[in-house]
Structure formats: C-alpha cells, structure tokens
Length: 459
Image (tube, rainbow, N blue to C red):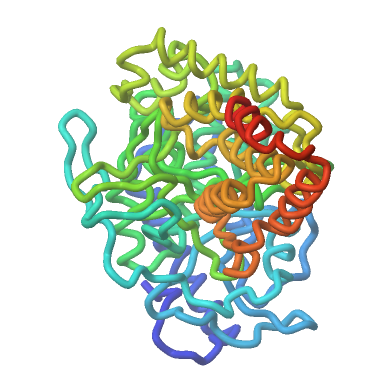
C-alpha cells in the first residue's frame, strides 16, 4: 500500500493522492470481503467508498458539516493550496482523520501549523512494561521533575466523537437493537477507511493497542478507539453542529494506565500537531507513570462505574481507602467553591480582600494528600495563595507560589513563564513590596514585634 509518510520534502501531487486513494479503496473492499457481515436481515453493507468523501490534503473547499477522511497536518499557504510538507515528517509521521469540513479548515488556518517538529526529550524519561493485572503500562526510566516533558506524540488517528451513521434516515423502521447494530457496523466501516490510509508501521501500532470493548457490539477498530482515545477540547465542532468533541488515538501515550491520583497530565499542541505528556509532581525512577480515564472529583463508587468499560478496577491509594478519600475530595470541592472559583480565574490578578492563608493551606494539603496536582482546583488554590501572600506583603512566599503555579500551568498547558516573569511573580512582587512599604509607614513605633507575631499566627 502507498504510504502517507515519507522522507521527501516535496509536496505530493494530486496524481499521487488519486492513485493512493484507489489503493486504499482496494484494501477496504478486501477487508470487508474477508469479514462476514453481521447486519440485520434486509440491510446491506454501507457503500463506504461512495458515501464518504475521501479528500486529498490539498482540498479545503467543502461544507462545514461534510464529514471526510483526510490526512493532517499539512501546511497551507494563505490562499489555501498546500505549500510544503510539515517539518519533521520523516520522524513524526502524519495523522489519519475522520473530521468535519469545518474542523479541517480551522486546523489548516492555525498559525505555524506544521512549522515545528514534535518535541523530543533529550534523555528518555519512560519505557513500556507489563504490570500485573493491568497489562502494558508506562514506567519512569529516570527521575522526572514536576513540569518536565515526558513524551510527545503525533496521533495515529483522530475521529469524530459521535457514534452515528450517515444513513440514519434509512433505519427508522428498525428496532433499537437492530438500529444500534447497524450504527456500530457503519462506524467500523468508516473508521476502517482511515486505518487503511495509515502507513504499515502506524497501522501495526494501532492494531497492537488494547481493546476493552469486545462484547458490546464494537468492531475491532471502534473498540480500540473507545478504549484508547483522548478528548481534545481544542477540537470541537460549533454549536450549530452539536458541539461534538473529537477523540485522539496515540501509540505509546495510549499505553498509560489510570490512577485516581495521576502523576501526569496531557494537553494538545496544535502547531506541532501533537499530544504532550508532562509530570504534575516529581516522579521517581521505577515509578509507574499514570493518567486519568475518568472524572476525579466524583465519589469512589461513581469512578469505579466509569472505569468498568475499561475492564479495570483501580487499586490506587484513594480507592483502597474510599471513605477517607471521598471525605477529603468532598471537602476540597466545597472549600474551593466557597472561594468563588470562576471559570476565568487565571486572568484575575486582583488582590483578595481576605488575606488569611491558613484555610488555603489546609485545602492545598488535602489536594496533595489526594494526589490531585493535576486538577484545576489545585491550580486555583496555588494561584490564590500567590495573590494572598502578595496582599500580605510577603515577597518570598509570593515568589514561591508563583513558581508552583508556573509548574502547574506548564504541566497542564505547556505554557511556562520566562525568568523575568517568574522573578516578578507575574507582576505581584511589585504589589507585595508596596504593601510592605505601606505597612512600614503605618506601623506604630514599638509595635513591630506584635505585628510580625500576628502575621505569623494568621499564616
């Protein structure tokens, strides 16, 4: 089969993609000719090659709601046509996608798309190994610092998150069971089109991924997608199209096992078109590297139900002692809610009116005990502590918590402050110094000791 990846820096022509698509059609037809159909009586196989729009990377002139199979990332010029292959193509590969016309144009318009290779770690930080009762997972090959990049990968596959068929209007006469059966079959056929477009190495990597959906009607491709995909908030169709998220399936990143107290977080980087994994706290050599498969703020019983579809029962410390853990997480959520916790909290640098830090430190300690440094709650509390210490005129603590907030932001979003910003604590050091001066002027003579004692008690 022709491959979508290569070492040449020249842009592939329309003739290449036409020939390539013809070969993909042959592989898809062969795949389904060898697979017995399990459709209800009277329902024919979906003619996927004529139903789906299979586009060359050159094309951008399609409607927003047109679902299509295509290859990304590609570098487009300002007027639309392809300019040249993305940087790092030979080592990073390309991603096969089942996406909307809207999303393809949105991605193509991203500044610097394809201008940067997927980042590499200078000294390898991880390896894959087998864990008893878990299967394959990831372990630290060396000590890893909080905020450090562990792994970045260009996905094997990106697919629409809605499990649906383009011929739904023709299925209204079917029972729900038969209707669901047809949908599962059709989605498998559509996703197969993208898998058959992969080069042999990437296709093999996809087929080697775990599948925990063997008995719910999912085909082998859909099962692997449902088992291994990461949701990407940056990839979503607009409200008029249902605001459906997309799933990203990677190779090694898909091997990460779950913990309710994960030591990493991941984020999507559009310019390099890669999923990136960073440590949220220090990880020692030999320790398992973990992520989260479900919402972490819900009780133990709810988390276990969410994890059931992965044929997995979590044995992390929080799950071993659920009463203690549930109590802590409930206290954290309630305490954070009492402080407002607005959606845009990271943009609000206004100093708090209440400057007592002890309640905030108690919440921080509970979050650390639960291993929830990955959570937005932890970032919010660290951010609030930074502002509160600035309001108290404590320059050293303001800088300390600016550093903690910076690590949290780096791990979760790949955004790090420069040395100058960090030294100034995002502008709050100047505020803290002003508070110090004001207190010095207002402090009555002979009361300095009392003032310091009171400040220490409030902390």
